[in-house]
Image (cartoon, rainbow, N blue to C red; front, side, top):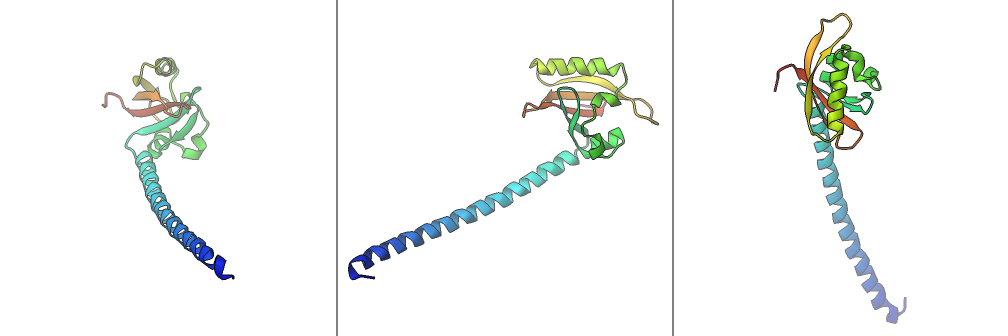
Length: 152
């Protein structure tokens, strides 16, 4: 309000306007990044859900943490009903030791391992599948892909 402070006030106002423009530009960049990230997440989720093989994330005790649509279809139940159940519940008694031995090799850091397992579902013939297993990068357990036995 006084002539001696008016120049300082104008300089401060200009600085604030410059900061506002910078903030607006940063906000636009963040919005654009968010849109790209959401699109990428959607694509990755669809790739997982619609993969042509059954994919599972299991914990150290083989409880199902995540599974795709092919996995739910293979096990014959809706996905939400399968969460928390043991993958071993769907295997023949002979397949459980093979799965456990393969998990132990992966746990020991041998890398990706595979074994043949037999699926034992109610009202369905026994089906032999190849279980390809690796450590879950998040450290929660294991990633398991079940595919037709002998498939590569």
